[in-house]
Every structure is written in structure tokens, then in C-alpha cells.
Image (cartoon, rainbow, N blue to C red):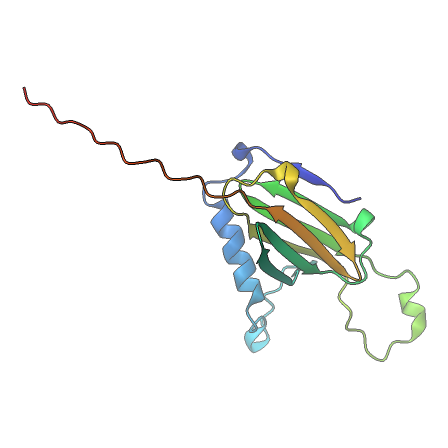
Amino acid sequence: MSTLSRRERGDVAPLGRMDKLFDEWFRSLPMRRPFGMNWDWPGEDLIRVDEFRDGDTQVVKAELPGIDPEKDVEITVADGMLRIKAERRIEQDREDKGYTRHEIRYGAMTRTLPLPLNVAEGDISASYHDGILEIRVPVPSAPEAAAPVTIPVSTS
């Protein structure tokens, strides 16, 4: 079941947003296992996305082949951040097939992306087709700047 929920601001540490962005950037680097060290987070991987502007809508396309969007995808919005969490489940009869190579990734995957300012979370929509999750975020137009006000200076 796909869900969209919102958490209150008190749930997040002051630098939590920056920490999440840094962690995901670090995980996306091509040098993930230098000199035999394993930097992967167990059971998690980074969801690959394309993000672009389509008129007044921010569009995020996430690559999630082999996922049942109604059961295995959770989309949440909190503190100006969009979080996509998905899980690809392991086939039950996997061990009986005598694999020569087994490279398909199973387990939990996440991605956290910043949202544009002043987005109404209730207007965000998501759809899934042919292994691509598409999230559409309507972006409000920038408020018009007020005319400058001249403040008189009084002398006493």
C-alpha cells in the first residue's frame, strides 16, 4: 500500500536533514568498497532518480523495477523532505534454481530529496508504471515582492 504521511517538526534533530542528504550523497559515490572495506548499509541501497521541472510541477522519477507499489512502497513528507522507501522481496524458491550468477538486488532501498519551498503536501501525487515510480509535486508560484516602504527618520 502506498502511503503519504507527515511527521511533526519535533521528530527531527536540528541537523538531521543535512545528515540525511550527506549520507545519501556519500552512498551514491562510485567508490563504495575501497580496499576491501564495506561501506554499504546492511539491507539498504540508494534508489536512483531523475528529477526535473515540468512547468509548475517538480517531477521525480524513481527506478523501482520488480516492486509491487501497493505493498512495497512508502512515500512520506516531513520537514520539507520527500522520502521514498521501497523493498524488493526475495523469491521463496530462489535456492532451488541452481544460480550461476545472482546480481539482482533484494531488500530495502531509500531516497530522501528536498522539496521546493511552500509545497502543499496534500497536492503531491504518485503513480507507478513499467518499473518507474513518478511523483509529481506542484510548486507554488513565488509570491510577488512587496513594494519597498520608506521609513521616516525622526530627530529628537
